[in-house]
Amino acid sequence: MAAMSAAERFVTHSVENQATPVGDYNAYTTDTALREAITREGGAWADSHLSEFGGVAGGELMRLGYTANENKPKFKPFDRYGNRIDEIEFHPSYHRVMQLGMQYGVHAYAWRNIEKTGAHVARAAVSYLHSQAEAGTGCPLTMTHSAMPALMHQPEVAKFWGPLIHSYEYDQRVLPAAQKTGCTIGMGMTEKQGGSDVRANTTRAYLQPDGSYEIVGHKWFFSAPMCDAWLVLAYVDRGITCFMMPKILADGTRNAIRIQRLKDKLGDWSNASSEVEFHGAWAVRVGEEGRGVATILEMVSLTRLDCMIGSSALMRQASVQALHHAASRKAFGKRLIEQPLMQNVLADLALESESHTALTMRVARAVDASPRNEGEAAFARIATAIGKYWVCKRTPAFVNEAQECLGGAGYVEETNLPRLYRQAPLNSIWEGSGNIQCLDVLRALNKEPETREAFFGELLSVRGENADLDREIQWLSQAFEDRATVETRSRLIVERMALALQATTLIRAGNSAVSDTFCSSRLGGGHGLVLGTLAADAPMVELIKRASLTGTL
Image (cartoon, rainbow, N blue to C red; front, side, top):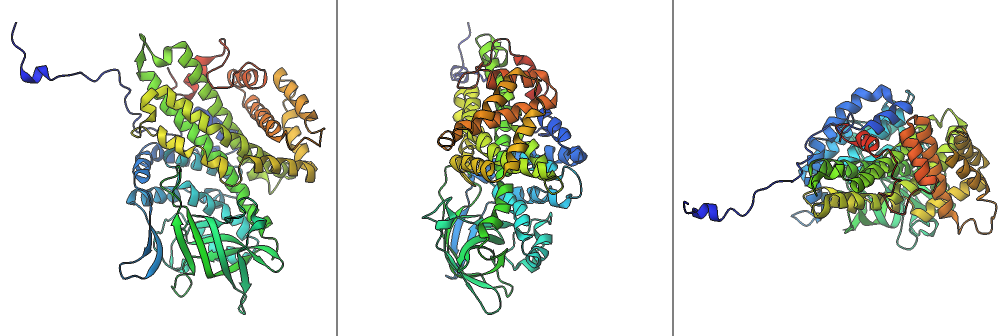
């Protein structure tokens, strides 16, 4: 027998039984649940646009997302000569992500197509695709999209800013807005002492002879400080009021906005969030004095829908990673995807993801129809709060379950699951945490009886099609009777309202394998407290095939 060479003796192992990278793919055409939801809710006319962006989102944008998060933004308070500049320095990958996001209309697709039925549905799909690849840039893009309804309260302000924020061009130059080809809008609501209780704010606005205002105070969360202007709240004598505050004034000088620091956040690393002070910052009023909360809530209602979109997108991307890994990795003599217990987990992930996507797009249709249909407007008001609560709450546990499907690899930064996991809690906190959403549901039901009619009307539209849902409707009809304890019980109530809405939407979708399994597991008591606890006779293979990129095991 020939002696082994030195090289042969140092061959320690060969690489085998490793999952291949997902690689470039079309995030739209491979997503059966999303495509069906878009068609069902009236956005099919945008199919070619979504197909094109789906290829970008599953390819270049996905790769850029890694780099943008590896290179966090840096605060540059001064230039090399000591001049105060209050700028944020981003990696080129961030700017490319923003360019692609604006090119495909994450911030403006609904407004550019508002005459078409389903404009907000189509735009929701654009945002959903973008968020799977890079969620941090969703912050400025979402706020730019959401600003327009608030700006409409001051027509002259909307007339100036509208064309700039509806532009598909990303212009990162620091210039007066009138000299730019496109602008982004941020928001400043919360302060140290108040958080969600914005009426505890202390920032004040002082009327100037020319009708403008000077604002003095601070914001504890100022998102995002690289934008061209922000909607902010400040007090005047008549109460809290909404203002539009530009970054650069018309004469080219910087507004008196002083960034104190960037937030060191759990996730959302590509995006810059800040604390700021206003040292007499110039601003113009938006809406009536004393009506600032109502005015800015026009913006918040849309950003809350985007929280649903973003969370649904994170769950979809996490399930894509889990399904792909399980299809190519073997354990105990079979591929993971063929193992019975893993099939239960993967099928449950698929079902959970689809239910959130379906509810999100249903709410987007309600938002779209709101200007023309009072019933849909009422439904949008209550369903947005219900969905914001439930969809966002479910995301962290979902992403963690997907990580487990990859084992230790799911905890390593080279996969994108750690980034998804860090991102997962954000939307449940931003724009009102869970308690705020539950209180908003109760407020709507108490002060706007039409929201109750819209909610139950939605459920009753499929009454008789599933016994588990029928029982749930009966429970919900009695859940509000004990008014003395309803606030204390509101998390359970809103959770069950959300599940009933998801069941209703899936029943309407017409795939009984999906809707029956959802109803029996989520409403019928046939499910545990964690994912992967479907009944043994659930159509697991069918659910997995439906969610996979290839439509197969």
